[in-house]
Length: 119
Image: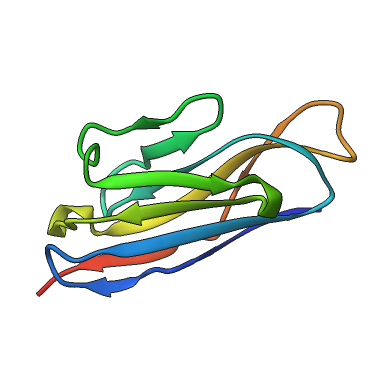
């Protein structure tokens, strides 16, 4: 089995910063890429940032958020600066992982962590 465990969510004032972490564990053969999505109430889940062979960001977070990874620990981070109320959402970690028990990569999701930006 493969699990993604997120941490680092919470309440922050506008203009503040938070750092999310997501660690993949279990029977992992290889990780193709890892990233973050978010979903605000009433909205569809949207891409925030991904990393792998290259990094990409949603236009709404480019320049404020930074995605990084620690390959040795199968962990991805999302540093979020200059947070705005519109960043409020549940943030989900995702990874394309080839487990030991599969011949092809599988998309996995974390349980989600709430980020609330409010004064």
